[in-house]
Image (cartoon, rainbow, N blue to C red; front, side, top):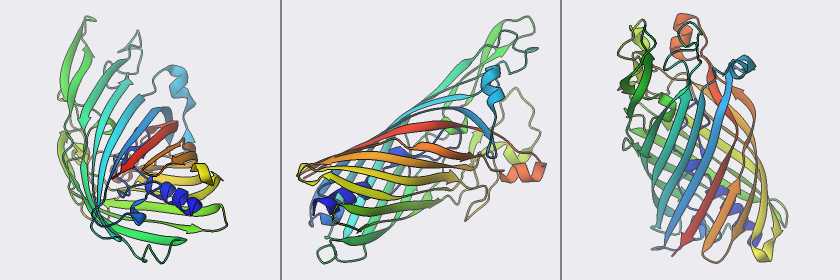
Amino acid sequence: MKNIILALLCVGVFTSSSFGQGCVAVRHMSCSVGTGANSTSMMHPGQWQVSLGFRSLHSYKHYVGADYQPQREAAGTNVINDSQSFDLGVTYSVTDRLLLAVNLPLNFNYRTSLYEHYGNALTVNPAQKRFGTMANGIGDARLTASYWVLDPLKHMKGNFSVGLGLKLPTGDSKAMDKFHRRASDGSDYTIEKPVDQSIQLGDGGIGINLEIQGYQQLFSRTSLYYNGFYMSNPRNVNDAANVAPDKVVTDEMVRYMSVADQYAGRVGLNYALAPKAGIGATLGARIEGVPAYDLIGGSDGFRRPGYIFSIEPGISYSTAKNTFFVSVPVATQRNRIKSASDWVNNKHGDAAFADYFISATVTHRF
């Protein structure tokens, strides 16, 4: 039984705070059901579960396609994103199979670069000065209904759930900050404009989220877990300008920021290290990304599509009412694919990625 409980914990910890690596902005979306020793699959009607997720990442490595661009770091012109995110989740068990959940992220994003301010070239930025912008606040909320397909009381060794939900545009998709400019006489002044898409708090769209998650006991102490989601964003673009007000718009297709689809998935094994103590270890693989073209609606606007494939080790601990899980996904493949505008203009943009990120989730049931 403890092995199954730990497997359920690994299923549930696919929290929204776990996604997004650097400039490829996979925002706070995920399977929204709860976690832990008293996982939502084992909740009784009328019970509640609260969860708090945390994610921290530092992205700085540039890629064009799957090709690493080390010259950006060597020259000091790489973009650096630092993100710390919290995700509060509340789950209510309507029946032992039907669950309702609400999730609200809180983001603290900071970005430094040269190109967004004075520029990368020595002719316009002789001192190679780097400046920062930030966006802090709530992100896009999610409302989700999920249903365990098999009766949890009859299928303790293996089950899966499907979920359908909405992402609401509660996060600011037009967060502003000051950007530095260098006058012809060398003096500094600033302009105000929307921050980069990768650190925006929301995307401005109402999304439709489809998710699946499940587990299966394989051996006495070993279980398989899997989960994933695809979030469709029908809106084409939002009202956040991609081009600075002091720059000339040369491509109408990317005048505004795109409202992009998102996806992610995980699969792995859980091993009960100390079943009586509620301690387990996990090892899995995960993928997360942004497609170049949306499933529904247009794909105009500026976006950095791509994906990150990672190996994810983790450790879990559970008690009667509380659970804790921490993992450190390590990127093994990063790919900044071509966007719709890249294909039209016969070019290939870049994106910065993290080497790894830290993800932790704690839950309590009552």
